[in-house]
Image (cartoon, rainbow, N blue to C red; front, side, top):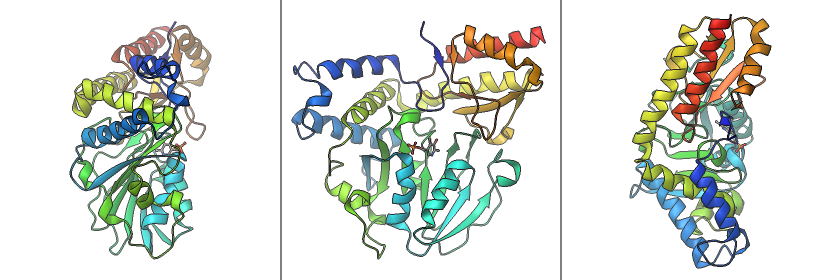
Amino acid sequence: MKKHNFSAGPCILPNEVLLKASEAVMDLNGSGLSLVEISHRSKDFVAIMENARALALELLGLEGKGYQALFLQGGASMEFLMAAYNLLEKKAGYINTGTWSDKAIKEAKLFGEVVEVASSKDKNYNYIPKGYAVPKGLDYLHLTSNNTIFGTQFKEFPKTDALLVCDMSSDIFSRVLDFSQFDLIYAGAQKNMGPAGTTLAVVKKDILGKVSRKIPSMLDYQVHISKDSMFNTPPVFAVYTSMLTLEWLKNKGGIAAIEEVNDKKAQLLYSEIDLNPVFQGFAKKEDRSTMNATFNLADQDLKETFESMLQEGGINGLNGHRSVGGYRASMYNALSLESVGVLVDIMSEMERKA
Ligand SMILES: *Cc1c(COP(=O)(O)O)cnc(C)c1O
């Protein structure tokens, strides 16, 4: 039986994407060769890379606006340092909404002064800071649009005259935003786009080349741009599968269409969390993520019952991160409303039993 996969990452991908990707591993487009055994310089793969990059810009509404989409390696964790390597000359600002921002701050400190502009650490990151002033004179301001672990999500982004850099690993392509307000967006593929192994970086070209340090080729966005994201052998399977997911999303009607479904899923689950006395939400209501919902049992004595019901219902990946505890339901683009319905039914069954 196919499970209802609420895993936070690597996570669920559309069935048809998995099917096409596995076919290509055996035989790419009837070529008699596997996707993973052909040259990345072959016509077939160059077309795949071009298509993936073009689809990313198209879906984000960033075509013809001076941006380049790159499929890199090293995960979002590599982008923590690449962003600073390429953009931090003197001083950068970071908004700290938990684990991922914390890690990004640690890397940036290797390259210059880092100002923590705002933080929600005082409440174990259960909210998104608001009402702070962004200092002047920053090279860039960095934020994490969606905190995968704590289940918080920016609904509005700060205004700043500095460059805006955003780690969108866990909510890219999930909701309509004016993506042109960002100068650099990055996202590890394995949350909402594809398998682990590639990272999407969308960078505005004219922000580059301004720092005085020398940058190693592999970490230099300009090098990757000049080589059309093929400076070295790209992770061909991850790029191809990401391309298939982006095609799937485009055929569904793009980000606006998927956002409607994502909102429905989030509403269904959060209203159950709010109405059902057996459960308590973790993140502050106004900052709740539509991608990762964090909650816990009000009474830990019910843990065993709840978890055996989850198992029986075929629910996978609901355990919360160790820094929050409890449960986390990740509802990425490929998760169906029906799967959320199955979880909500189990939760209301718990209320009847309690
Ligand atoms: C998972 C995650 C990361 C880390 O991604 P890797 O690709 O494993 O390096 C960074 N930021 C956010 C918001 C994440 O959810």
